[in-house]
Every structure is written in structure tokens, then in C-alpha cells.
Length: 168
Image (cartoon, rainbow, N blue to C red; front, side, top):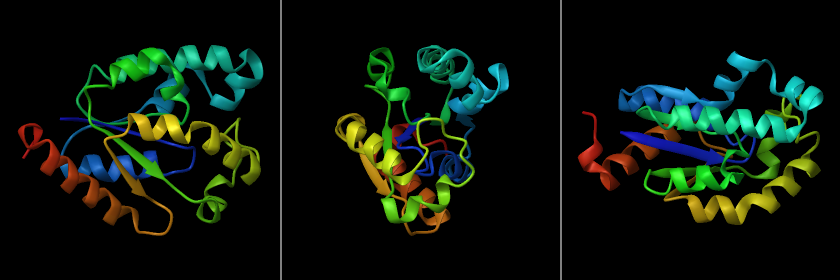
């Protein structure tokens, strides 16, 4: 079984992805974590080499992650790459959404180089929302519900819509 989680920064892809993987009994991969492990902090990559360099590293991490099974959480901008869009066309893709009111506390800490304020986050979401929706097979709002509940809902969806891929 392979499920890809996409969505805006701070939508809960990593947090929910870990719980979803445990629920389904499959591995979890976070493409941002792969980049950080191999190349250092994403904010440092942006500062030292720019967004284009980061996107190339991200694309390589995505390609490697898609060679594995399990739950794969993409960084918020990973789907901007057309090769990535093609690669996930036959994979179940779940869009995680969050509203601006709920995202404020999630953005604390400033680890996201393209999101320095709620206004910057909203502009990014507005620019990408149509693409996110076009790639997704299902969408789940993460704004104000326990992550455990959301993970179970996604697991139920995956089992129902992809029963031949059910690992249990």
C-alpha cells in the first residue's frame, strides 16, 4: 500500500502521516525529513542556495520515497514539479487542508522559509489550492479535530477505496 499526503505547510502532513502509517501498519516517509537528513535544514538550503536548488533536492527525495510502500508525506511545494505530478497520478493522494484561524499556532517557530506570516501562508495556499485539489483523490480538514481521528478516517477511506491494497 502506498498513500501520498499533500497540502499546504502546517496542514499536518507529517503529524497525521505518522499516525496513519501506524494505523495501517506500514512505513512512514517524510520527504522534507529526507532532504534535511542529507543536506541540512531547509531554511539554510533556501538561504544558501535558493529555492530552485531546494526543489531539485526535494524532487530527488520524492522520487526515492515513491519507490517505497507506506504513507509518504510530501513537503507543501513538492507537487509543483510536473514529474512529481505524473508520478502520483496512479497513487492514492490525500489532501490535508487547514484554515487560517487554526494554522497560526502551527506556524510558530519559523522553520518554513516561504511562510513568514499568516498572510504569506494564505497567499501560498491561494496560489496552490487548485493544483492540490486537482491531484487529490480525497480531502480531509485538519483544522480543529484530533489527529488520531483524522488518521483513522483516512485509513478507513484507504481501505474502502483501495481494498486490494489493504495491508491487513
